[in-house]
Length: 150
Ligand code: FES
Ligand code: FES
Image 1: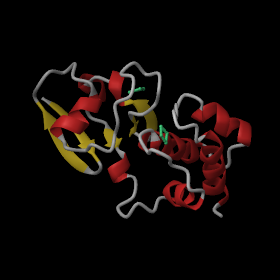
Image 2: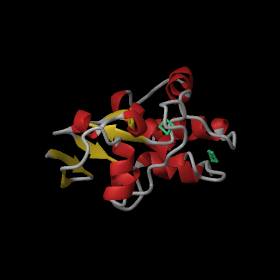
Image 3: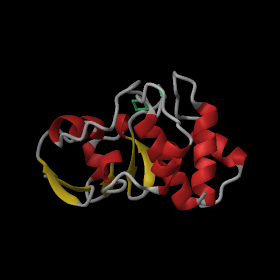
Image 4: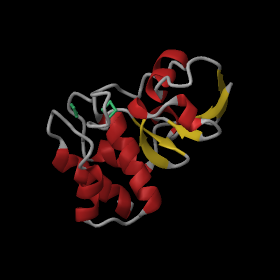
């Protein structure tokens, strides 16, 4: 039996320990905010926090997260008002929206570890999160806004 805490709630999984966390979250826990893009750690759409660190849930087996605390986009803030989410609205970041949960989870993990990243640090950290709509400039602007509290 694998025990995990997801968005503050205890979960138990007695199925395949090799099941990717992404599919546990979406299909078993009903948390569909986390998206499937590539399935190979190449796009960042599936990014969640595992013990506060950004992780690609598509390649993270349930066995690897036993005993951890997982946060998904649904659990980042109860009212969608995390500073990164507010900055995202301020900068009108999303286009189609598909990549955005992963982008926000990556950005919020960055700011948790480095509250005032340089523009270069923002670009470096966000480089692994692909946006096929090309919202990269607004993403960088929003992360900077969130980091300055404006
Ligand atoms: S779906 Fe996980 S990185 Fe692309
Ligand atoms: S907003 Fe469409 S993929 Fe990023």
